[in-house]
Length: 611
Image 1 (cartoon, rainbow, N blue to C red):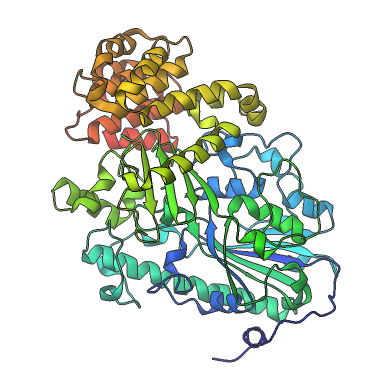
Image 2 (cartoon, rainbow, N blue to C red):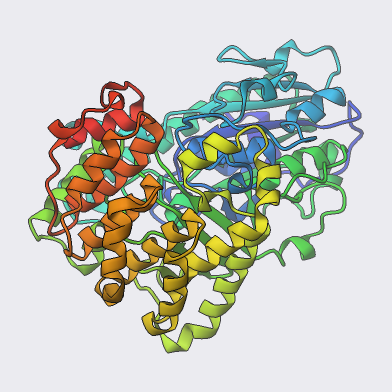
């Protein structure tokens, strides 16, 4: 291989030099759907990616970098705003409606442009915000966008996206893939069955990493030819985790922990908190990326941004390595609803499953286009999985705690282990404080939120902060023993606020048959509550506990609405009840509302599945 100047730079001792311009250039190289464990840089058995590894030799490798969400639109909305998506109402994928950016805050490249930068994006955006919020953010955002069109001497910020590792590239028959990686040598996650389909899918995905690395190398060569390496910070990161089943779309380590490497140009070494070839253990999150870029550019960071810089003036290695927390969230992924919040602190990951009966393997059309996903489910239904492998298709605990140093695949839940109660309570309290403080808008059902708050979600959240805290406290009754929670459940089911009743019923479903004292009240709520989503949750509770056939109530509620977004949320309950064991086969021919023929992907996917 020809030794280029870029390669030689990796062997040089960094030194300060006179910069050719008064601000550094900043480039982001983004690959899709790949968690850190798939790279040799992070994990034995990971893909060799020599060009990314060269970046590490002239820069910093972040050992603990995290997307805040395990799916692209929510992750990218977090990045472009610099804010946690559930605070903004931007946490749903795919968007069924857009929301407004916070008052007084712009997408962060706007501040770069205002301060003389040329800003370009090639080319994925996928933001969940109103289109008008993108005004004046990019000089160009398209597949033709290039940093080369700037004015002479003008600093630039450029984003280059590569889709070679995207989930869609894994579709097809794994038994027919042409492979470079030996399937016999891949290491499967503890929760995956050991089959040729899984082994070949893993090998194919590793091959895709090597292919994207070659594309990254070609792009880096262009920067070198253009003489830009000495003045350009180059970030490489994955846009969230993935992509084998159980990663993308799931707020766990494989869905959230991403590779992140930043090469530091020799003319701007003073803006790095550590010399080149350093691995940093401090935690960094996607919410920090905007603040980091603005700090490198010497631009004041807006107060409304949630993140904090991890490079640039004022950042020290000592402080950076003290950062040991990352916050993550999962809500709706296409047609599949869930509500999970997670906090990693040090070696522990704590997760709160607010609707644990929404089991992970619940049908999702796009997920199940991937052959190993479908095979995994078939093996479960035929009883051929071990305990670790079958958990994906069963109701989860309300909270989980994993020691990632000994259990990287998160299969041994320590939440009920007396030896870890102190850690559990600490992380539970930290998470509760975060979501109440934001506040987290997901405690209102999505269709309700979209009808009332899309033009000013942050203001809506602040106005309803105490109410949201009450809903969170109601939801957290499921963390108590039933006897301790009983009085609070009764209060919630009798509340005037329908969303307290809504969450009280979800708590009943979480307790299952322990909540038998509330069967009769649930039957009444299912029959005649004024709020259709309360009726839905009551029917769900009664159906999961086999106390009442939920299908008549759910059919009635579905046919009474013309709102396809509301219908999709109710259909999630239908599919949970149908696909749980034993299930209720739902007769889709009884659905007569107009949304049945709606072509919107989310509701259409559910209707198609039920037919």
